Image (cartoon, rainbow, N blue to C red; front, side):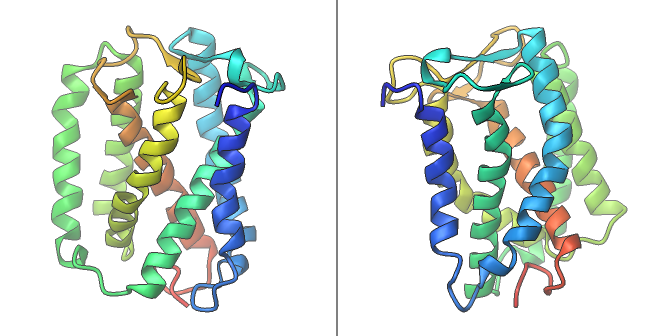
Length: 234
């Protein structure tokens, strides 16, 4: 895996699965692909601005040994693609789960889960306010969850929670490699002064909530764009 195209290959293989399996008749994800790209592009804009600011500030960076050498501003092209391939792959998982298994045990617990996550984040924001990655990620997620819980009717939120739990499996594989698992050095490095230094394996704890925020935002947008029933159910 020691190749300057490693990050590019990770993006390619991440997108390949949903692309090859998108013609399943029950899900017909190919019909959603254009809107999935639009949703990813809409969400990518603020995330890429955030990424650019934090990269320039030295809060994180990228190992050139695993990059093709193409950049958009301070960001390698692979990092830009990440905000398309990962959300689309997770949206694919979301649509498959909901079409094949429309009954969700989390439905009756959705409000309690959302309220619990919101309450869980509040003290962490205060306790870890000196760490920029932690502060920004936890604050944005708390605000978004609060909005979805109390101000915007979101009948598919329980579906998102279920999909995220399933997405954690490929997430840990992909993010594990990016943060240094199975390779000599991390593709993405983090400034220890910008986060809590709590890691699960090689993955910063904040990445799990950052990933959830990314997936949550993408699915909320595509649900608004799609004419399907909540959960992208046909």
